[in-house]
Length: 151
Image 1 (cartoon, rainbow, N blue to C red):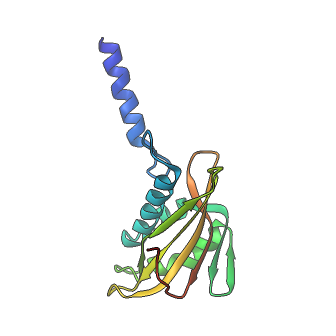
Image 2: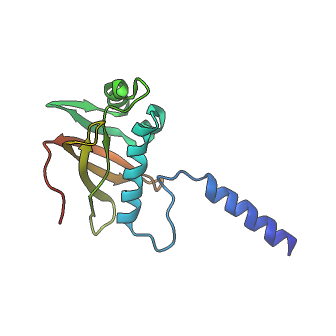
């Protein structure tokens, strides 16, 4: 009986140690997991945590800075580093729509981007890929002018 309790404690600790971007609850849909990953990704900006931000970016990601493509995680992180400088986030974002392919390997997320006063200034569009490790990571990201979300 004690060994079962110890095993349960060890198992619980191992689960708690797992990354929030790959953890999934039983019955949780792929859409829910991508939504949670997007929220955690956005939280990196609020928390001013560039290192954590980089963990959500796929190694071969392409993020657009206007019409310039930042190719690869290191270039994306280098290009975004300025947004993480200083104590206050220059913008925030949150999803208002997430769609996942039936095959479950790719997803799209979108939502408003807000300035520090809360005014909507843009819309983000991100393509997520389910990595072999079970983590969802962004492979493409591009902003667009503000537009209405889903109804």
